[in-house]
Length: 195
Image (cartoon, rainbow, N blue to C red; front, top):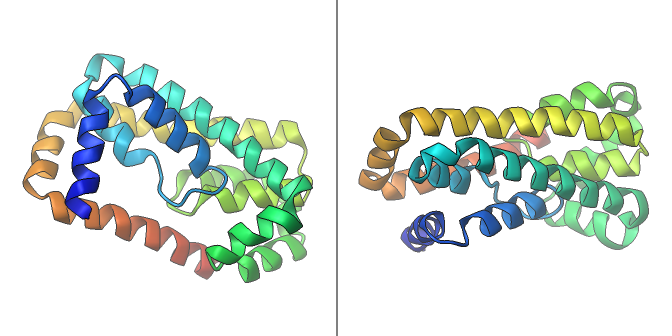
């Protein structure tokens, strides 16, 4: 299963569908999908170094737009959809504690910026922002800053060091993919612990 995922990512990174796949995963990860776009972005950039800024840009834009979907889910569809997503990931108790404390509304800009850079699932932040009715300008500004920073930093690293990193990944496929899965699990665990 892990090797199939790796092979799929490598194929997509070298295909004409690379941009579309990257946009789709970036969009849905911000509102409900568990896996981040980072691994695909890294591989795509390492394989297409001269387009690193392009891939970071489309990943950032799609992630921010997906964040607006998460915001809408929290704002208008919380009972129908948002609570189901949070319950599925086991985040409802943390969500309630975060929103009810009033700290999220008070420090929304900084919380969105901080959480958007970490492995903590961004969907939690986008849904919470809509539920707490955070000002859209604040939400959009923080999302643009944090997602653009995250994806451009990753793109620059893989544009500069992509070949040796890809060689390492190719040599240690299973380890690398287990680390990706572990980082997703760590992000959810971290969210439960820090919030």
